[in-house]
Amino acid sequence: MPLSADIPGIGVDLCEVARLEKSLASKAFVRRVFAPAEQALLASLSGTRRTQSAAANFAAKEAFLKAAGTGLSGFELTDIAVLRNENGAPYLRLSGRAAAWAAENGILARVSLTHEAGLACAFVVLEKTQKPAAL
Image (cartoon, rainbow, N blue to C red; front, side):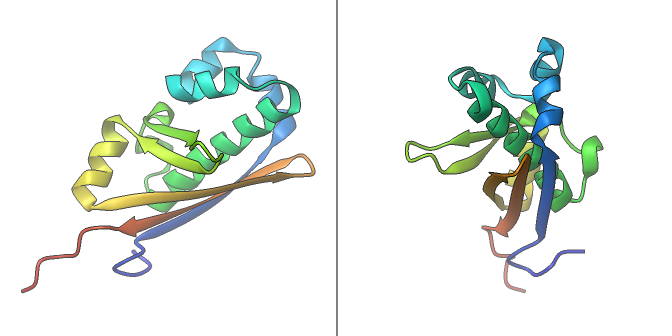
């Protein structure tokens, strides 16, 4: 059930940074979870910053799926790219079925990321960008 006409979904997720550090060693995991643009972003980072960013991105994907109400069966994780603008602020770039779903439903997804003490957290708000037609 939507929260409101303007905010149809919210989602939050936590990810343990150490868990992602182990997973990043697997190239198959990286290809299955991260879109090519995210892979490039992560490759440009090193050490703790890379691992924290990967964990935050993973949490953002999970938070988006919760906000959309689809769970893991809704979209491919690579359909949800978590990127950073020139100022470092995170944003979601949707593709594939996730982009089609967002366009069909008039949805704009907003994301906030943080990490502290070995945990990464993401919060996603889905905003309705198209108003329903007047009756």
